[in-house]
Amino acid sequence: MNAVVAMPSPRAAMRSRFFVKLIGVVAALGLAVGCTTGDSGKPSNQAMGTVMGAAVGGAVGGLAFGSAGGIVGGALVGALAGNLVGRALDNQERARLAQATQNAFVAETNVPTTYTVEKTSSQSSSTPATVVAAKPVGPPAGRADGSTCRPIELTATKNGQTTTETTTFCQAAGSTELKPVTV
Image 1 (cartoon, rainbow, N blue to C red):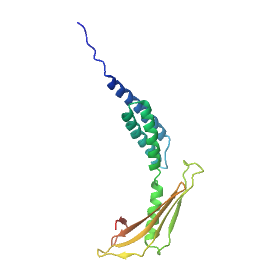
Image 2 (image 1 turned 135 degrees about the vertical axis):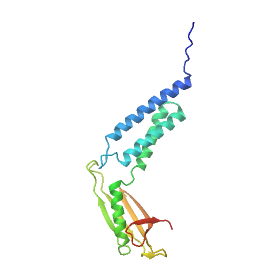
Image 3 (image 1 turned 120 degrees about the vertical axis):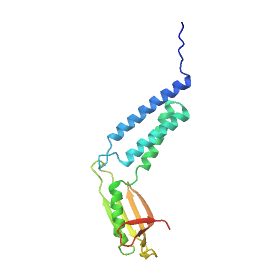
């Protein structure tokens, strides 16, 4: 009796090679992120953004072009985009900005509360410290529900780039918690 052996189609073989290469790229990036940790021993936002961007970009590039070049090109573009997105404020910087916002809520109008968040030991000595600030830009206003609201300008300077946004925060009667609102 002759046995018939089914050979995989060229498309199935290509798909199989694609996934093997993609797994290799993701594993290498995972190793790189494992070596890049922040204060808490966890990967930094920037490192996680880089890995996630590379994984998604590699998958999209591989599927779109069906080649190793597509995987690598997509991974590089995705890693760059993810890295840029991951540069957002880290937990310590967000905590200091929240503290500055609490202080600004009760401060005189146009008097900023500023904190400098020193760089960590994992950052290079050429990395400048992050500066966060909150400044009330209008007087507190009472609402019918008993809450008090106030517009506050939030500013963060990280890696030489400054971002400024004005948000109205409200505090419910008898509470110390501030909540941003849309007006």
